[in-house]
Length: 334
Image (cartoon, rainbow, N blue to C red; front, side):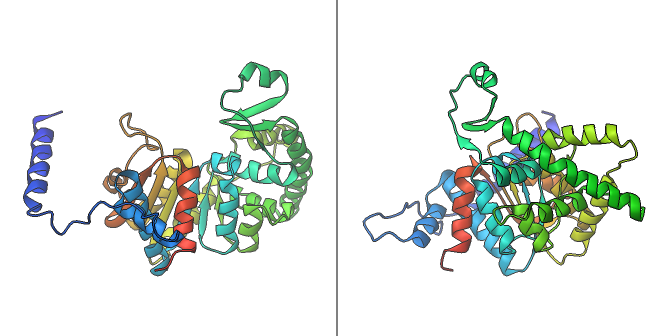
C-alpha cells in the first residue's frame, strides 16, 4: 500500500469515528420473537435488526421495494445455477407478473430453462462420486443430478428450431441476434413453467452475452458447420441494452451471482453514469480482484452505480436468500 493510500485509509477511519458522537439513536439488535403468533411479514422485518448478513438482506428488501415504488426499470441478472435449482420457479413468477423489465443470463440459464420443460432435474448428493456418475451418464451440479438424456431431448428440440430461424433469416435477408433467438425460443417452448416463455409473452428482453457457452454453444458449433453463412450478431444486443438504460428515468439492478451476466448488466449502466439502485446476492470474495466478488462501491468507481445510489451486497447462497427477498417484496406489509 502506498503512503497516499495509507493516509487516505486513516483519514477515512478518523472521519468515521468523529461522525459517531452517540450510539443511542442507532437501531438496537433484536431478532424475531417466536413467542408471538408467527407472521411472515414481521419475521422478515426482523432480519433488518438481527445483524450480520440478515441485516444486509433486510436492506436488500427495502431497496427493491424502493425500485418498484419509484418505478425504476429493473435489470435482473442471474447465473445458470439459479435455473438449475428451484429458484427458476421464482424467476418464472417474477417474469410472469412483470416484476422485472430486462433479464441478463448465461447460456446455461437459457438451455436449462428449455430442458426442464422437456424433462426435470432431480435432487442428488454433493458427495456422489464423479467417476461413478460419469459411468452412469449422470452430470452433477452441486447436489442436483442432470442425466445426459436431457441434452439429447434438448438437441432434438433445438435443431429444427434453428433450421426454421435460419431459413427465415435467409428469406428476409436479416441477421439473427441472441436476443431475438431467445425470444423465439420462449415462444417455441410454449410452456408456462418457462421464464423464457413468459419473457417472450410479456415482451421482456432477455440478453445472453455468452450465448456460445454450454450445450447451446455446442449445438451452435455443429449448426455453423452445416451452414457456414449462419451468423449471430451480438453487437445489436449491446446496442439494445444500452439504449434501454439510457432511455430509462431510473434504473435498478438485482444481480444473483457474478460472472459475465453481472458485468454485462452493470457495464450497460455506465452509459447513463450509473444505476440508481443495486442489490447483489453472491458468495464471492473481492480479495482476488474478481468482478464477481466486487462490492457495489467498486462499481461506483467505474461509473456503473451512482455514488448516491441505494446499494447492498448480501453475502451467501442465493437459493436461500433470494426466495426470502422475494417473499419480503410480494407478501410483506409496508
